[in-house]
Length: 92
Image (tube, rainbow, N blue to C red; front, side):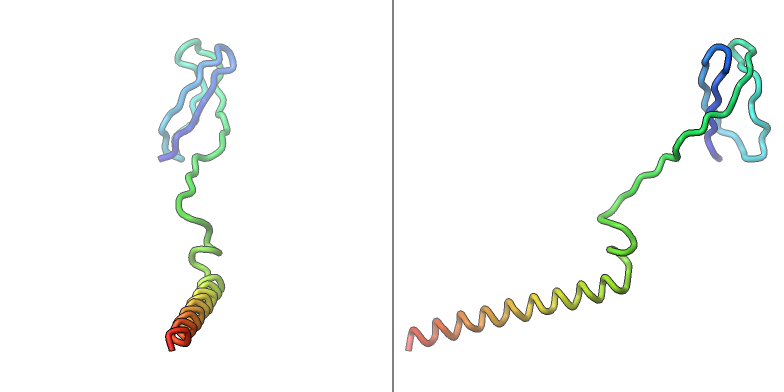
């Protein structure tokens, strides 16, 4: 159930209530009897993880990332082979 925040227009008392969507809004302050109004506030959202859909789950990104990773690995292998060949040539 959602949490609604009400504020009294007379005394400034602020109250948070857990109410059903079907419940009637609070109209009278329990402290002073003044008129209450709903307070609109931004929703509490937490973003967790390394990124967004595009970077985490998108097919385009995953295919592109895999291709780049594979090409990097191929380049590393070529570099290692060159070093090994150079070392073998020096020894002979």
